[in-house]
Image (cartoon, rainbow, N blue to C red; front, side, top):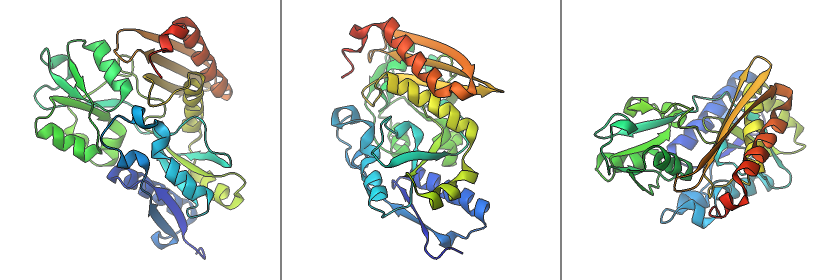
Length: 309
């Protein structure tokens, strides 16, 4: 029995709380602890509060982590649980990603109100998404479709869909599964034609560097293949200076001792896309991701990125 409960910091959405509870359950099983040995601390973030404009206009990914990281740095919480795809590539001094839980299915889920797949949507149909990557991929795949900004948590987006505000939307399959909402999915998007966001489907844990007690607690729940894949994907993002303002897709998969990476960058209008693929030893995951990012940046040319800022 611990003398003080381990404080787990998280956003307050149903999905964020589900991810915090999943982390707690793994730690309980790994160390023979009880629920009362933990406290889930809900922290409101700027990204949750800003609902009137795209996050790309308000500051990007860090809006979902800033307040949680402040609580971590000043000791109000012991660990922070995040969706990996929300994490900026540069973290505050003194913090690091100390563990990754085993990745869920990284695919995007299509949820259609009147059509079961994106191909079945009639010409001029309206699809809602807040992700610049999804918006660009939809336009790339179906230039005739009307894509609109679509903010809110999972439940809000599903309600807007039912109300008829849009004909369809896309959400992370992993998040829907964690919420027990897989039954709303009408199609799953193949990663070859609709590649996911770097980090999609993976929960990561952030903690303070040098906190040996926390490091020891987290070590048994870290899933090393997921960590290696995410190091590759995050290195790809970093090489492209990736943020919420940039339509970037990337997925690393480990087969035996080999890591295989496939990435894509798009213009926001979906008209132009550049793909990259590479593979190498798992121990070189980070270098491979960085190389893939540098390669696709060089092939696209600097002019390609001018509309991203």
